[in-house]
Amino acid sequence: MSINLDRLSPRELDALISKAKQRKTSLGKRKPIAQVRSKVIALAKAEGYSIDELFAGAKPAPTARGAATPARKPGKQAGKKVPPKYRNPSNPTETWAGRGQQPRWLAVLTAQGRKVEDFLIR
Image 1: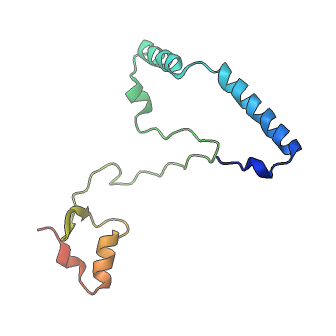
Image 2: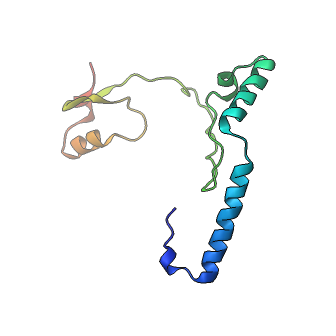
Image 3: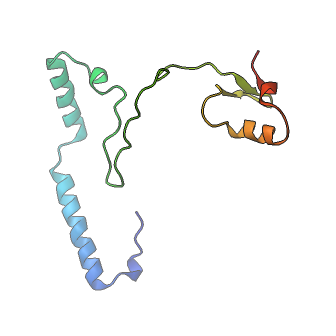
């Protein structure tokens, strides 16, 4: 966050200083993250779980900037790795499984008149 202090009035500066002090105080009251983490791990172990079991695939908590996006409903192929069907001839590490939007490299080549089938992996 970047604030141009030169443009703030004395009243605005005082308000900013007050908010900064409040934030510093609230952060100072928090326990160190390592201490909280060890408590959470100990509680999970006491209940017979691992942290991975409890939080695997969990979305991060909403931040001050915006809420977390809602989870999509799983379909038939949710979580399955699909093998690639198409390969970029100029960069073999770039592949596409044929699902979703075409990658840029393929969109450029098809715009030049080439066919998608020309890039099939055999």
